[in-house]
Length: 172
Image: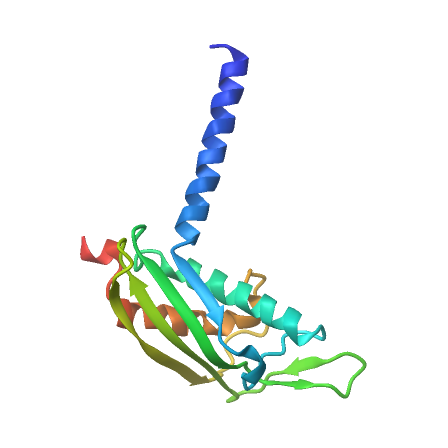
């Protein structure tokens, strides 16, 4: 086979794989509703606008990662975050702000959700509040694309299972 043809085939395959990943990720959309009114959404010492942009990216990455098996390719899950109270509190007295997390601190995520089918008809919708106490699970924060919100992962996974049912793999 001609090496140019092989290179072209590999390139086309790569482009299609990127398109597929973007299509799969487009099935979940996260929007922050009036983030300036959130209880606690500071994740850095940057501006609140930058914090909200980062928070939205991390929430979307978290929901996209956990939606596999619950949201099919022909469905869209819309998440509208109406309030968040991040774990711990920010201590501004040091030279740079530091988030302090203690045992039994409370975190909360409140959001509205709507699952739409391929015709944009609502399949399921509602409002959810995830609220829990922090129980020390790990001393080190894992390096993931939603590292500011890693503690929400199990709660959101439970929400998917309890709200949207069993994964496609569990039903087979």
